[in-house]
Length: 325
Image 1 (spheres, rainbow, N blue to C red):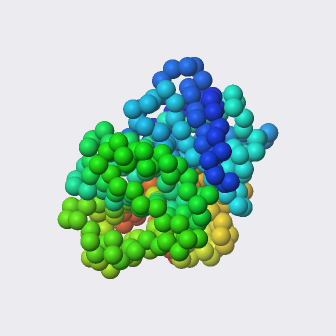
Image 2 (image 1 turned 90 degrees about the vertical axis):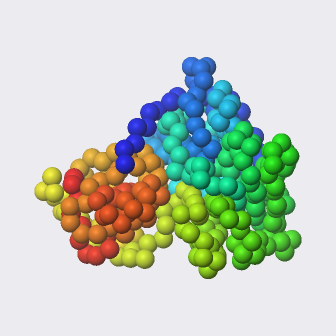
Image 3 (image 1 turned 135 degrees about the horizontal axis):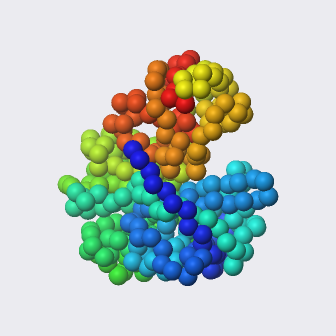
């Protein structure tokens, strides 16, 4: 797969505190022009500089695809933070300049779906907001199930109800602290023919949805998911990577990414924007061995083909990989 990211300078036009942990950032083009078109479910990668340190974080666009005068993203302060979310929460002010990439969509609405079932947990609500705008424009049949910890953590709830009221959609909230739980078995048991399911949120929710779909005999092609974090590795041990073009060998430590090991040894230079397996810029050809794919960029067919891998998150299934670097 090819990627064609372009960097856009933006100005932070507004920052809103939405919950104790989430802020919404409204971003306008620094030159005052319109921003590139996107579809519901798209994300951008926000690039930040803090002295000599650089952060690159992927965030879903939550604003309407029809409103290109500004983008909006929702940022949850992560604990512990790799740096990006804390930087945005603590250091970025209205009027500041940032760089973002052009939008990319790994979580698009299916054109084949006759009904769309959206399942969100926590900050995973953000891509569904742009999707609901798109579904309103399409007149698409849909329902949203949104689970969060407590009433104070139900980000954007009023806006979601308003969006649903403007279309044929339905919204249900599940507040864990109030004992409200989403019945996935019941949801999949009553899933309409031709419906597609989309889930975004914590890894546990995504796994629960996938297992419930499998138990109900739902075709995996009708279940779509997005999580801006690498999947957990079943093999977190050390392994060896041979870089065929440069003739160098790199030892990748337990829990270490191939990209970090290459950078640590200063073996070769590899471009990588996101370091989370979503942008595709570090896609590398596999010459020998098999990868354990932990990214969200490659399709299942591409992962099965074992032709390329994302070295920022994916690992070796055995003790050795030979890569075209």
